[in-house]
Amino acid sequence: TDPECGAGMVYAEGAAGEKAPVVGIVSKFQTQDRAVDWSRKTRARLDAAAARKWTRPTDLMPTDGIVKETAEDVTRGKRTDVAKAQAIYDWILANTYRDPKVRGCGVGDIKAMLELKSFGGKCADLNGLFVGLARAAGVPARDMYGIRVGPSAFGYKALGAGSANISKAQHCRAEVFLQDYGWVAMDPADVAKVAREETDEWLEIDHPVVAPVRPKLFGAWEGNWLAYNVAHDVKLPHAQGGKVGFLMYPQAETAEGRRDSLDPDAFKYTITTRPL
Image (cartoon, rainbow, N blue to C red; front, side):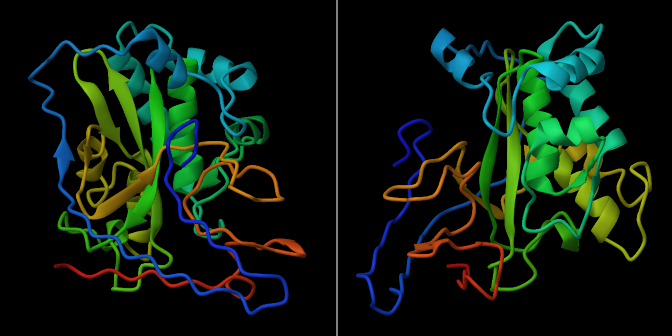
């Protein structure tokens, strides 16, 4: 278990010179849709330690420099945490886009995105930028790393797993902590995914196909997804390589070093799912 964020993991090792071990993991879980009721407020507070934890910087998500400057520009004049979260969400959708050519779910290096004005990416980039800007604006936020496990009942093929083989269905979502609502679900990256991949055309954010998703994913998640963890800067047990920015893909090392978990020729695994 990661000592900082509590991410659970399974570790296996084979003896030198032996064939690589085959490891199988079976998880049984229940999912549910999630949506905040904006008409019902409740007094929700984080203690000081938790507030510091969920506003602190990580290696890939600093909260100073250009990240802080951008967050201040985006949230200028916004007095409540809800207004700040909405402003950041809207800014992400106005300025970023999903780039299908990005490997895996992206790297999530938000400082580089802002410095280079390179706003194309996938969920770890776009939702990571949302979380980093929220933290820099003083709003507690976190990424949740996981995987899609079923089709979307919301009616979008881009927002669901298309088959029982979900080996490439990893997806991270985001949460912000709002004082009148507690932890609230967010997913601007999936709005961008609908705009880019739901049809053969690259749609504008206000296109009729995309428009219903935009307000839906400000405060809600569809329950066709399994969360793994909220860990950042993870030191893998017994690993010789450095930390990983987040843990959403299987990882492996040999005597020659860490394998590229996004290279199907060098690293193979299969993840399947079925309803019970």
